[in-house]
Each structure stands twice: as structure tokens, then as C-alpha cells.
Image 1 (cartoon, helix red, strand yellow):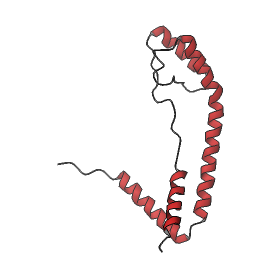
Image 2 (tube, helix red, strand yellow):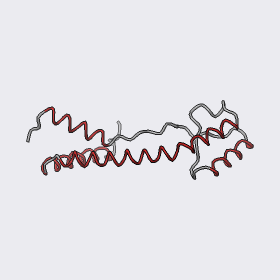
Image 3 (cartoon, rainbow, N blue to C red):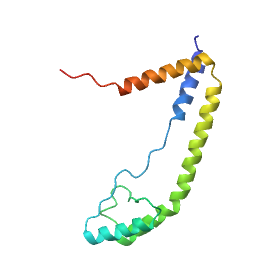
Image 4 (spheres, rainbow, N blue to C red):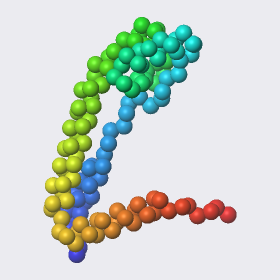
Length: 131
């Protein structure tokens, strides 16, 4: 069955948006420069929300210990709120995917399943040895 071009593009865009996941803002884990600073950082991390906190990129060698602790407190303050919002976004994305999939016929669902399986197989296939 041939899809009208506009419907097919909308379908592909909708399916692409379902898989979108925001990337964390803090990319690199900070490493303490001195032993005394390391112990203070460990104490702050243990007092926090259960997982190690990270300074924003390039902050490690610039901020004072007081600023570092203030940053960790701010991260704690917003961490739970952000986690709740991320969970809500994930739930909305699942609902969106379900509604989009409900529009498809059984044949369309079967074809999409085959396309996904082919993509997964290609991704997991071992690359050919280079000469």
C-alpha cells in the first residue's frame, strides 16, 4: 500500500519525536584536585540525594569550596523537580506513541516492525574486516 507523501512524513516525524530523550547538562565528572578537597566533596556527596553530584563543565578549578557546596545544594533543590518533569515527559511520549500507533492498520504495524527489526539487525551486525 502506498502512503500519501504528507501522511508518511508526518508519521515518520511523529515516530522520530517519540524516541527523543533530553541529554544531561553535566557531561564530565569532576575529580578533586587535593586530598582535603576530596574528603569535603565526598561528605557533600554522601549528604545529598544518594547519587554523586557533578559540577558544571569547567567549574572544578574555578569555584571555591563554599561555592561548590552551594552548587550542590542548588542541584539538590532542583534535582527532584527535574526528575519529576522528566518522568512526566516520558509518560507523555508513551501516550503520544500509543495514539500514533493506534492510527496504523495491522499491515502498517507489521511493516514498521519489520523495518525496526532490520535496523536493529544492521546496528548489531559486526562490521566487516578492513583490508
